[in-house]
Length: 124
Image (cartoon, rainbow, N blue to C red):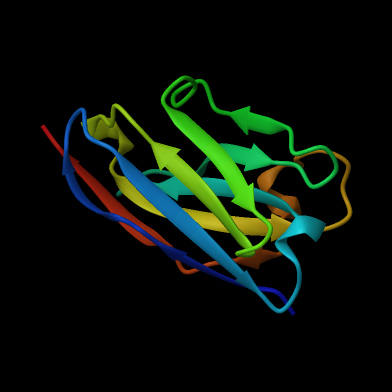
């Protein structure tokens, strides 16, 4: 069973940057579509970004496009989310999730392995 552990969250001022890491164990990260989701207080969880297993294609929600970058390091079995130009509305718990078998990044319900999340707080 694949296990995911997020890290890199913290408190940052608006305009700042953070890099989140999603360490994958129990299997090769290269075999999975890996996505980042976030959930702000009082709101539903939303998708942020995804990287596909087949061709490393990247997907971003409109709210983060141009500011966030997803990448993977096969040697470290880790997926990253580089977050630049952070805004207060980016404040949330960020989760990484993995899915194996779908072609491309599927909807949230198809992701079967989840990390516990890391808190990102952006002050104004």
